[in-house]
Image (tube, rainbow, N blue to C red):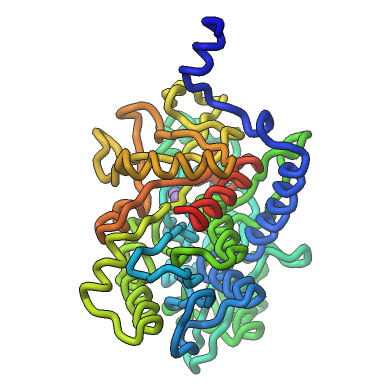
Length: 468
Ligand code: MN
Ligand code: MN
């Protein structure tokens, strides 16, 4: 063996997915990514993602757990939580006390939420006030076409599902921004202060009613419009949940079409690949579960977030329906023997901003799925640090299944950081590791992923379900 050969044998070199994928894999990747883009277009809110997941689950033989009285190996079920959170399970042939293989992703994404009293008139236009959701760079949300999705209950109790701005014939909405000619003061501010949270107001109308009796004529016209169209009054905004999101659809990016650009890929890229792998899974040894959670972007709080008891309750129900009765000891065994892949995105190295990454430990687009041992910030604070035993075991499974993977860390030490749902899963006393797809322009209205990494994430979850 030459020194060069020996060095190559002994050292680690990150690989590019296109060095390892054959023609058949590239065509599988393209088919998967076409489905993924449709999933993104069908689900721009957590509610819509859950609805689409239920539809796809039905097509793949999954039944609602509420309508099933007992379970056996091979059964496929899902359980819904308030229309915003879903758990899917495929019952394994092994006893459930040997543990569950769980993949968990979040399906909420940063956006602008309407306030409860949003509507007002100013300067002969009607606008809607918002409160942003999740960590956004506010300047990115101005001067782009926006769509409105949500749920409104009228005072008479009628439920209205809003979806305005996605069809070609729909109008869109917009947060206006200052012209450069008059932006001398704005442009001299710090970037974080250039756009004020209270100025993220959405333009929704400009035609006044012809009336001498009413002073707010444009607001009146908007109220008349939503009343005629939806039976809504201004009061109904107070009880509604309306999310404002980018109006554009998922697109291929690059001349080689190797990237996907879309809103909400953090974390629907993992949400979709997680869902797709459990839908495609057949007769696993261990019981496989997938959970798609809400509220990750605001701390996983609330009854539909990863900190909710929903997961424990769903596992208990499944265990009971499998065994007839599940004791506390059996339940504890299930949890402590379980392994979770917390599937969330990582920051891919951005060629425009190389300096914030430590490139030996950062993830790269087309480098494959990322296994992130720890996240956190300022000395790994707020992180679940996966054990060597778990990482080694999963690395072996990835190798056996020809899944290209890389390690990842969210930026240089002390540059910033972030967390995922992994810590909350770990707190239940399960083994857990973060695993997901590198993203560029994370939390922007148009996030970028590489198709090869989307494909490798799907392959990784599939390998995990089959072999862990
Ligand atoms: Mn995320
Ligand atoms: Mn995020």
